[in-house]
Length: 206
Image (cartoon, rainbow, N blue to C red; front, side, top):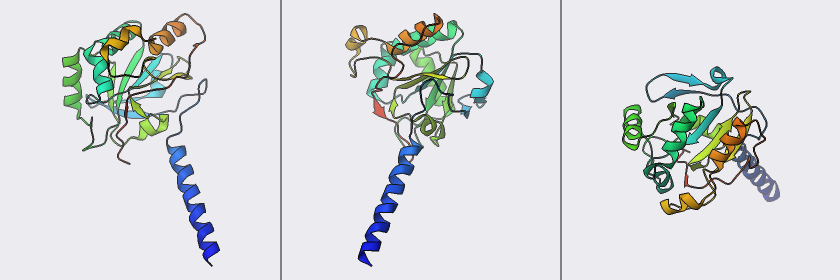
Protein backbone atom coordinates (compact mmCIF):
# COMPACT_ATOMS: atom_id res chain seq x y z
CA UNK A 1 0.00 0.00 0.00
CA UNK A 2 2.79 2.41 0.89
CA UNK A 3 4.50 1.64 -2.41
CA UNK A 4 1.33 2.57 -4.31
CA UNK A 5 0.95 5.81 -2.32
CA UNK A 6 4.60 6.65 -3.03
CA UNK A 7 4.08 6.01 -6.75
CA UNK A 8 0.94 8.16 -6.83
CA UNK A 9 2.69 10.99 -4.99
CA UNK A 10 5.64 10.93 -7.41
CA UNK A 11 3.29 10.82 -10.40
CA UNK A 12 1.40 13.86 -9.06
CA UNK A 13 4.63 15.78 -8.49
CA UNK A 14 5.79 14.96 -12.03
CA UNK A 15 2.43 16.13 -13.43
CA UNK A 16 2.59 19.42 -11.52
CA UNK A 17 6.17 20.00 -12.61
CA UNK A 18 5.34 19.40 -16.24
CA UNK A 19 2.24 21.59 -16.01
CA UNK A 20 4.25 24.46 -14.52
CA UNK A 21 6.95 24.00 -17.13
CA UNK A 22 4.47 24.03 -19.99
CA UNK A 23 2.71 27.12 -18.57
CA UNK A 24 5.98 29.09 -18.80
CA UNK A 25 7.41 27.46 -21.92
CA UNK A 26 8.99 30.01 -24.23
CA UNK A 27 7.91 29.96 -27.87
CA UNK A 28 10.49 28.86 -30.43
CA UNK A 29 12.49 31.10 -32.73
CA UNK A 30 11.36 30.99 -36.39
CA UNK A 31 7.99 29.59 -35.36
CA UNK A 32 4.68 31.51 -35.40
CA UNK A 33 4.47 33.84 -32.42
CA UNK A 34 1.66 32.93 -30.00
CA UNK A 35 -1.55 34.79 -30.81
CA UNK A 36 -2.90 37.10 -28.13
CA UNK A 37 -5.44 39.80 -27.43
CA UNK A 38 -4.90 42.31 -24.64
CA UNK A 39 -6.38 45.40 -23.06
CA UNK A 40 -4.33 48.56 -23.44
CA UNK A 41 -3.76 51.34 -20.92
CA UNK A 42 -6.13 53.64 -22.81
CA UNK A 43 -8.96 51.11 -22.56
CA UNK A 44 -8.75 49.76 -26.09
CA UNK A 45 -7.95 46.21 -27.11
CA UNK A 46 -5.20 44.99 -29.37
CA UNK A 47 -4.53 41.61 -30.93
CA UNK A 48 -1.47 40.27 -32.66
CA UNK A 49 -3.37 39.07 -35.73
CA UNK A 50 -4.34 42.63 -36.61
CA UNK A 51 -0.66 43.62 -36.69
CA UNK A 52 0.38 41.14 -39.38
CA UNK A 53 2.55 42.87 -41.96
CA UNK A 54 4.38 44.88 -39.30
CA UNK A 55 7.36 44.13 -37.09
CA UNK A 56 6.22 43.91 -33.46
CA UNK A 57 8.34 44.27 -30.31
CA UNK A 58 7.01 42.99 -26.98
CA UNK A 59 8.73 44.47 -23.93
CA UNK A 60 7.89 43.18 -20.45
CA UNK A 61 8.27 45.97 -17.96
CA UNK A 62 7.90 46.84 -14.26
CA UNK A 63 8.65 50.48 -13.41
CA UNK A 64 9.76 49.57 -9.85
CA UNK A 65 12.45 47.14 -10.98
CA UNK A 66 16.01 48.58 -10.71
CA UNK A 67 17.00 46.94 -14.01
CA UNK A 68 14.06 48.61 -15.77
CA UNK A 69 14.79 51.95 -14.10
CA UNK A 70 18.36 51.72 -15.38
CA UNK A 71 17.18 51.58 -18.98
CA UNK A 72 14.42 54.20 -18.60
CA UNK A 73 16.18 56.77 -16.43
CA UNK A 74 19.18 56.67 -18.77
CA UNK A 75 16.86 57.14 -21.75
CA UNK A 76 18.11 53.92 -23.37
CA UNK A 77 14.81 52.10 -23.91
CA UNK A 78 12.83 55.30 -24.73
CA UNK A 79 15.40 56.12 -27.45
CA UNK A 80 15.09 52.65 -28.99
CA UNK A 81 11.30 52.86 -28.80
CA UNK A 82 11.23 56.24 -30.55
CA UNK A 83 13.50 55.09 -33.37
CA UNK A 84 11.56 51.85 -33.75
CA UNK A 85 8.14 53.49 -33.95
CA UNK A 86 9.58 56.11 -36.32
CA UNK A 87 10.61 53.18 -38.54
CA UNK A 88 7.05 51.82 -38.50
CA UNK A 89 7.64 49.15 -35.87
CA UNK A 90 4.89 48.41 -33.35
CA UNK A 91 6.36 48.52 -29.84
CA UNK A 92 4.14 47.07 -27.13
CA UNK A 93 4.98 47.34 -23.44
CA UNK A 94 3.44 44.48 -21.46
CA UNK A 95 2.83 44.75 -17.71
CA UNK A 96 2.11 41.31 -16.22
CA UNK A 97 2.38 42.34 -12.56
CA UNK A 98 -0.68 41.14 -10.66
CA UNK A 99 -2.77 43.41 -8.39
CA UNK A 100 -0.90 44.00 -5.13
CA UNK A 101 2.43 42.97 -6.63
CA UNK A 102 5.43 45.14 -7.48
CA UNK A 103 4.94 46.96 -10.77
CA UNK A 104 1.17 46.66 -10.95
CA UNK A 105 -0.44 49.82 -12.33
CA UNK A 106 -3.75 50.90 -13.77
CA UNK A 107 -4.02 52.47 -17.21
CA UNK A 108 -3.82 56.08 -16.04
CA UNK A 109 -0.70 55.39 -14.00
CA UNK A 110 0.96 53.56 -16.90
CA UNK A 111 0.32 56.55 -19.17
CA UNK A 112 1.60 58.98 -16.53
CA UNK A 113 4.79 56.96 -16.04
CA UNK A 114 5.47 56.89 -19.76
CA UNK A 115 4.92 60.62 -20.03
CA UNK A 116 7.30 61.33 -17.15
CA UNK A 117 9.98 59.04 -18.58
CA UNK A 118 9.76 60.25 -22.16
CA UNK A 119 8.71 56.76 -23.16
CA UNK A 120 7.07 56.25 -26.52
CA UNK A 121 5.66 52.74 -26.97
CA UNK A 122 2.91 52.24 -29.52
CA UNK A 123 0.73 50.94 -26.68
CA UNK A 124 0.92 49.50 -23.18
CA UNK A 125 -0.87 46.20 -22.53
CA UNK A 126 -2.19 45.59 -19.02
CA UNK A 127 -1.74 41.85 -18.54
CA UNK A 128 -2.49 41.59 -14.84
CA UNK A 129 -3.78 38.01 -15.15
CA UNK A 130 -0.43 37.09 -16.69
CA UNK A 131 -1.98 35.24 -19.60
CA UNK A 132 0.17 36.87 -22.29
CA UNK A 133 3.29 36.70 -20.15
CA UNK A 134 2.91 32.99 -19.58
CA UNK A 135 2.09 32.44 -23.24
CA UNK A 136 5.50 33.89 -24.12
CA UNK A 137 7.34 32.50 -21.11
CA UNK A 138 8.28 36.02 -20.00
CA UNK A 139 10.39 35.64 -16.88
CA UNK A 140 11.99 39.00 -16.25
CA UNK A 141 11.48 42.71 -16.67
CA UNK A 142 12.80 43.69 -19.06
CA UNK A 143 12.33 40.66 -21.34
CA UNK A 144 11.97 41.30 -25.05
CA UNK A 145 10.52 39.45 -28.03
CA UNK A 146 10.53 40.49 -31.69
CA UNK A 147 7.97 39.23 -34.21
CA UNK A 148 8.58 39.79 -37.92
CA UNK A 149 6.04 40.98 -40.46
CA UNK A 150 5.02 37.41 -41.33
CA UNK A 151 4.21 36.63 -37.71
CA UNK A 152 7.30 34.58 -36.88
CA UNK A 153 9.15 35.01 -33.61
CA UNK A 154 12.66 36.09 -34.59
CA UNK A 155 14.18 37.28 -31.29
CA UNK A 156 13.74 36.54 -27.60
CA UNK A 157 15.93 37.55 -24.69
CA UNK A 158 17.58 40.48 -22.99
CA UNK A 159 17.92 44.13 -23.89
CA UNK A 160 21.71 43.92 -23.86
CA UNK A 161 24.76 41.90 -22.89
CA UNK A 162 25.63 43.26 -19.42
CA UNK A 163 23.23 42.04 -16.71
CA UNK A 164 23.54 44.87 -14.22
CA UNK A 165 21.46 47.72 -12.79
CA UNK A 166 24.31 50.19 -13.40
CA UNK A 167 23.58 52.86 -16.02
CA UNK A 168 27.29 53.18 -16.78
CA UNK A 169 27.25 49.68 -18.27
CA UNK A 170 24.85 50.60 -21.06
CA UNK A 171 27.49 52.23 -23.25
CA UNK A 172 29.77 49.19 -22.88
CA UNK A 173 27.09 46.59 -23.57
CA UNK A 174 26.05 45.05 -26.86
CA UNK A 175 22.46 46.13 -27.40
CA UNK A 176 20.86 42.92 -28.62
CA UNK A 177 17.48 44.45 -29.48
CA UNK A 178 18.91 47.33 -31.49
CA UNK A 179 21.18 44.93 -33.39
CA UNK A 180 18.29 42.52 -34.06
CA UNK A 181 16.05 45.30 -35.40
CA UNK A 182 18.84 46.61 -37.63
CA UNK A 183 19.52 43.12 -39.04
CA UNK A 184 15.82 42.49 -39.58
CA UNK A 185 15.43 45.83 -41.36
CA UNK A 186 18.37 44.94 -43.62
CA UNK A 187 16.77 41.61 -44.53
CA UNK A 188 19.43 39.64 -42.69
CA UNK A 189 19.09 36.66 -40.42
CA UNK A 190 19.31 37.80 -36.79
CA UNK A 191 22.73 36.66 -35.66
CA UNK A 192 21.85 36.41 -31.96
CA UNK A 193 18.21 35.39 -32.04
CA UNK A 194 18.08 33.99 -28.52
CA UNK A 195 19.89 35.59 -25.59
CA UNK A 196 19.62 35.44 -21.84
CA UNK A 197 17.19 37.93 -20.36
CA UNK A 198 18.06 39.59 -17.06
CA UNK A 199 16.16 41.72 -14.59
CA UNK A 200 13.48 41.32 -11.92
CA UNK A 201 11.22 38.28 -11.95
CA UNK A 202 7.83 38.99 -13.47
CA UNK A 203 5.38 39.33 -10.57
CA UNK A 204 2.66 36.93 -11.67
CA UNK A 205 -0.30 36.24 -9.41
CA UNK A 206 0.71 32.56 -9.27
